[in-house]
Image (cartoon, one colour):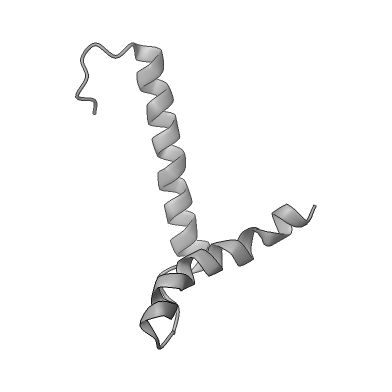
Amino acid sequence: ICTDPDLPLDQLLQHYIWRWEIEVNHRDEKQIIGVGEAQVRGARSVERQPAFAVACYSSPTFAD
């Protein structure tokens, strides 16, 4: 779905691909990493947990 009727097809497809990658990332964060399912107590912990989980999951990638 696009609200710009003058957008060239190649740009439209590129934006769609970028958006799809974001959606897949969100799905993986929820299903694989468990973002949003942490058992934390403090309000600050609730805010920080998703970033911490993603950082822990991606740290082996950056270690190489």
